[in-house]
Image 1: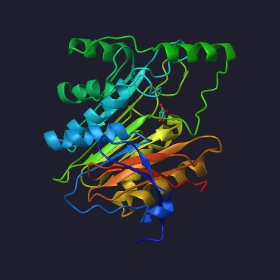
Image 2: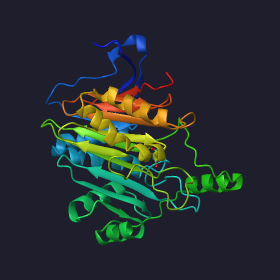
Image 3: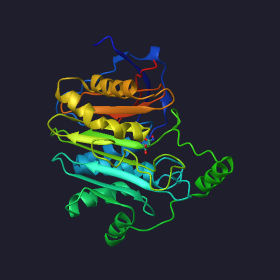
Length: 324
Ligand code: SD4
């Protein structure tokens, strides 16, 4: 076991209540977890336990890691109380909820939608872009038309709660789209099935009260998500502009290709960002999973968490950060 220790926060059983366990009451484990080859693994950014559990269930039922990722990401997309993803997401400064998402499979296929209004499951629309069109990204009105043509239901994504928050924000007129290091739920999910196939997805409403038309890292392949079935997968959360300018997840996967473990690769990518840019008040976090089932994470600021399933039990971890 490496001396690099992780904090083990909680283990949550399938459909059971969370049980908080102190660090001293459980064995200390390496931050860099080794899963045995042939073992399925699902990892998500932030405390997306419900999403991981749904993905795990779907993986057992269908055997498809892509189906599992899509089903898992539906959980926060459909949750009105999740203010960073899908229905109930915080709007832009015009009061419109605009969503970004992308998906990538084990064959290297990719699909994405961005600046899309009125459809609560952008991950599924991104999957259809991947499977039904010769393109990778559809944006704005084109993505909405594609969703409508493919039978997705148009709804109002702005909940009462989000509208209230927007109106309060308008009164404050704080036009700085600064990201809060502690409060996110944007979901990036990557997974490995028992046959050794990787897939991933990412879905968000982006920065709260962003400029109209702003697109973050989450729908951009190589920024918010990258999957290379020969090497591994990575996904990102935090201030998308920093991830876009460094193609963060492509970098993480390339570092893994060059022999770094998932956690070392995430750390090196975070360091690349923090040496190039002023990150004193910004958060970026990466999670990564290797072809052999090792996983790890790293962030700029403290407070980034991620959830892992290698069994029906979901484990919640605190990621290491530069500021530890
Ligand atoms: C974005 N990366 O749009 C997203 C935001 C995010 O947790 O990840 N929040 O920049």
